[in-house]
Image 1 (cartoon, rainbow, N blue to C red):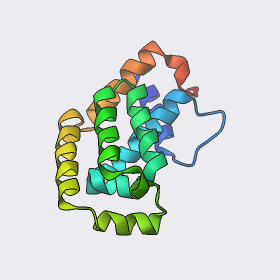
Image 2: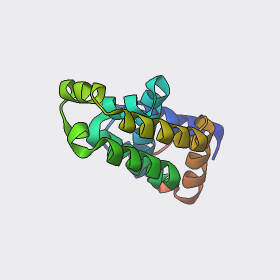
Image 3: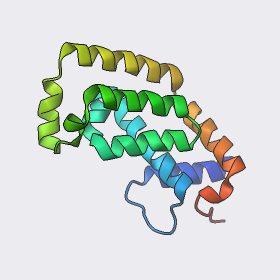
Length: 147
C-alpha cells in the first residue's frame, strides 16, 4: 500500500465523528483501536478503561483482533475482566469514582497488563504494520481512497 493511501486511511480512522458509507469494517477496526491507543498513551491502560467504558473498550479489543493483533486484544480483554463489567458499564461519573476505589490488587494487575501491552505495542509502528498487512490482504475492508 502506498504511503499516501495508508495516511488517508489512518487519518480517516482518527476522525471519531466520521460515519456512513465512507467507513468500512477495516476503517472502523482501526478507529476503535486508535481510540484506545490514544487515551492509553495519555494516561495508561487503567485510564483508557476508565475513560472509554465497556462498549468502547470492547470495540477496541475487537479492532485490534480484526487487524491481526490478537495478543493485544487478549491483553485488553483480560484488563476488562480484572476491572469487571459492573465498573466499566457504570456512567462516566460513577465509573470515575469506582476506579478511584479499586483495590490495590486490581491496580497491580492492571500495571502488569500495561507492561504486557507496552511490550506488544511499543509504538504506532505496530499498528501501521497491521494496517499495511490487513489492507494488502483485504483492501475492500477500507473505504475508497480519493485521487
